[in-house]
Amino acid sequence: MSVGCLDAGVAFLVSESREVMNVRQASQYLGISPDTLYRYITEGEIPAFKLGNRWKLRKTILDRWMERKMTQATARRR
View: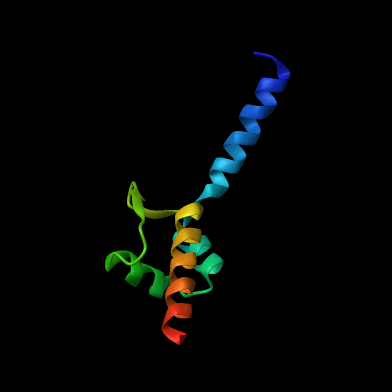
């Protein structure tokens, strides 16, 4: 493996680790409390998955969820 490929692999792993967040990181990202986020997860409002016994959330899914919420809020105002 060349050094360039190794660097690309490390960069990929670093970006992938930022893609998946724990509840604390995701609640800060969304600007809500961890308790509210847990409620959204258990009600199926926000998609999440368990890794071991801890909830994990994908940033791209959170971004899509926020976009959908903003679109719904805008539509209600009209």
